[in-house]
Length: 348
Ligand code: TYM
Image (cartoon, rainbow, N blue to C red; front, side, top):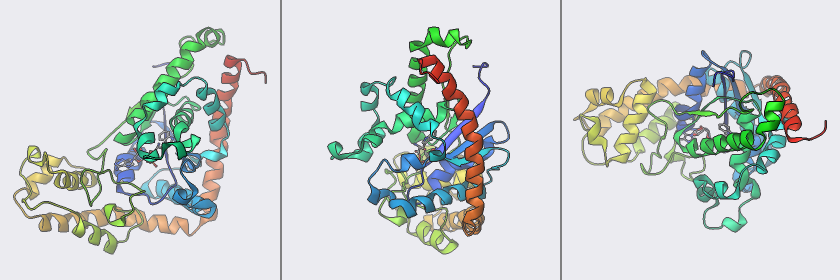
């Protein structure tokens, strides 16, 4: 893979509330990767509209949520000058490449996507074509920059595999044309998922078998990045647990999803292993552990929430970041699209 310059791409949807799962599973890793990679972080507004308007909330809410995700990126420590932060719809090459990929990807591949099945639910006939096509647009997001590494939470693994399949099939289908244009072995890299840290799948605070999600109707199921100290304290105190004391060893967390989840959250926030957390709290009651978790969560998330608020009070600044990032992203994407057009035979 040395042929491809190392480049990180990832995205977050501007729908609903950004929560601890988005932070621990994704955004925190985005921040860490800046030291070793060139990074492009996108607010995927075109993905947000794949569900019904009443889910994403209409134009004013979409604009608000887009700025909120951008503010979260910056508040968490992403440097939009050194790297690129923008919203997807500013770069039309994402949709343009997605069309070409629509003609590369196979219906059978998309029919296997579990996230579509979950999101479409029982009324599949009534889901949007965009929701079905979501993973193809996601592949275009990554590959329009020929990105090599993609930090995501565990739930995006299958979509990343599809991106690799699309890249591989494009490389095979057009192998001769790609070689003719001087790309010795393949035009697109096969992007690697980076699923990092002890909290790649943060679960609901109300039900340890369900993923923490923006769309859960209960706000008590998640800690939002915008929650203040009181809200964090209330949600942690109310978080579901079981009657047993905490175990002393990680093995003791098996079949105890709520305990496992809270210990995982504690470990991720503290930057420690679950075993170290259990060394301190094993054998004790949940109330003691929860009090410590509240203090830790408030200490780590409080400053992020405050900085998000400060940034959101200045939408002009956020918009200027997105416009600048969009222009830089577009210059890169346009180059890839020119090559794709030459490879496919579109005159330009
Ligand atoms: P979204 O907005 O649903 O999620 C954003 C990121 O947060 C991670 N995540 C979680 N991680 C741990 N525990 C959880 N409970 C949890 N919930 C969400 C997700 O895995 C994701 O990394 N399809 C993408 C958006 C996207 C994208 C892309 C990502 C569009 N194009 C290209 C990478 C590359 C998504 O799930 O967004």
